[in-house]
Image (cartoon, rainbow, N blue to C red; front, side, top):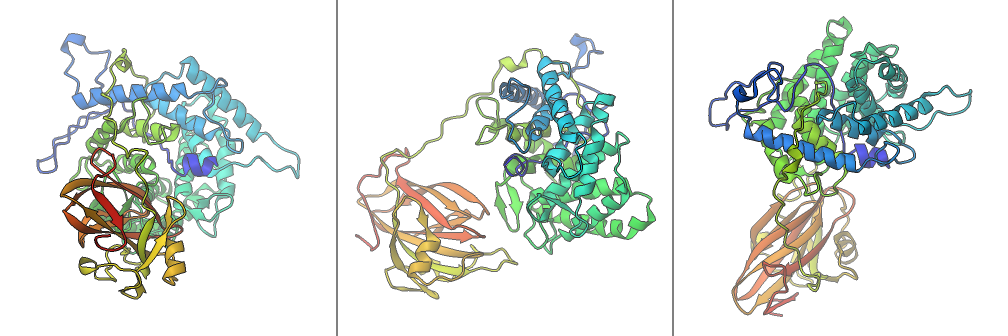
Length: 571
């Protein structure tokens, strides 16, 4: 479903205020050094045609690499365009992905007059007019989403003040006004509860419409209601959550902070909003502290842990928050330089970003690199920079096909964690350092039991509920253990995939700590001693499934020699 796949991972902002040319230089030094002043992006462009070429200053190497990466990313997006001008259309949502791709291309420096861009715009306008046509009484309007509408409004703004585009904004802004839920003070999916992510896109779209003097009826009341909705998502930990009562996330915290800033701009001077604006500033201060303490450009913070869920959506959210608040640094961290360096190393060989090589992750990466929030897109001379490609990434070692998965384990659990402290992996209910698992041996309030899965995926909830009488399925952890006997000292690798985070322990010592609220892949080096070692996994579960898939190999991904694996020491 486009809403959940395209834009629930996605959050596009792009469009307001100050004009930036090419990629603004970001010479912010390392945190230990005093920060140097940044140049004004409005005052210069590295590709200014007004300067004599011989006298032009040397281009920042980071900027040069960013320009090449963006050009390459734009080539990837253009390669995914359909013959009719669209990008990967899903029937209920014909324009969301197309709007996102066009927005990234325009900010990437592709000219609006480029025939491929024009073809995409023509497709978009045709679909909008079919979408917005007046229908007879009793005939429902086509299903549309908040994400899709918000993104499209941002694109229409970025296309400029031409009436051809401005006239299409009114029906979209009116849809957002109609779909606002006063009871929840937020927007949501048509078939789900309201959430902060949908609401962020609604406000970004309404802001873009307002900047073209397009406003729905009772606009101020909607903005004030949305501000109250943001406050409903603040958490005791300080950050903002996806829905009220959930853990704070980095992506939602930067979204909440950006929404507060937009609301302040729209509600400024309105006495009815004074009290709520004051409460919002207090909430923003607490959220900023939470985020500064957990800032990362490689993982999305969640509670006391991390997730990669919606990572590129999160990363572009950082850019939007930092630009809205005019931040050169987040805490002591040079957010743009760190994020840009990460994205430059993360780009795939075909110019895309993300493990799925898709339009969404690539578009968000381009928008981050272009510092696209609060800017109008600007064409940029490309001068064949796409001819040079970043070096190909080294191929990752993978287990050989003939290495079997471990299907037989000793299991115990489940053990309840504390949701308020987010501590499923920090609890130690069995005395892990001294634990020596054996079938039917007591383990805290559970017992170790032998379990063999009928498939490579080991369902720990099924195993512990059937064998150990486990009753707690959410906010808990389970254990799985085997004994590895080697005829010599040797290096090994554990290839592991778990749903949610995991601790890997070898003879009671922690060798990997992956406290993530998501499915994660682990490639952990192990030092096997001569004799028998106890390999124990502690897998946490936030909700839904708890499972694992595991293989042991040598460092090159090949089968281990001289090793046996069993449920008793030495066997």
